[in-house]
Image 1: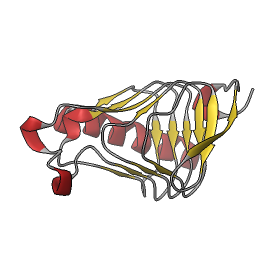
Image 2: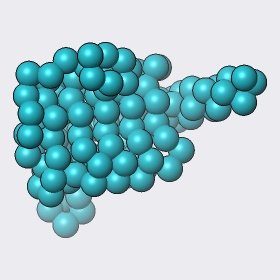
Image 3: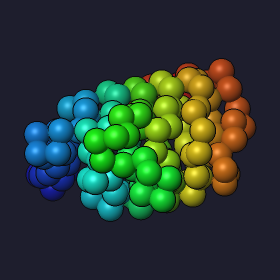
Length: 141
């Protein structure tokens, strides 16, 4: 059991590191896999709601140099709501808003805003089911 406690402590410290050092707006109870990547080029434009889980190899972007959405000129935030699950290998593009209680399928590329209470999947991600309810960390109720 001490290994579980140790892992949870490391995850909590990493989330605090993102909040304090980089200035990301991340709820304290968010779980981010150690292999997930959050954009540190424009970190203040990332917001993640409470009890959200981000699986391994997921990428959350907050800038795009090719379209000049970077640095101080780009203030559009990448938002992920509360009680969401971001599947492994998913990519969230800059400026996208994901509503509360959303499940993003593994390998999905989210290019547009996602309404709350839905499941999205694919490349580009499309709503495959709506009207869902999730509990903590994006598990179906």
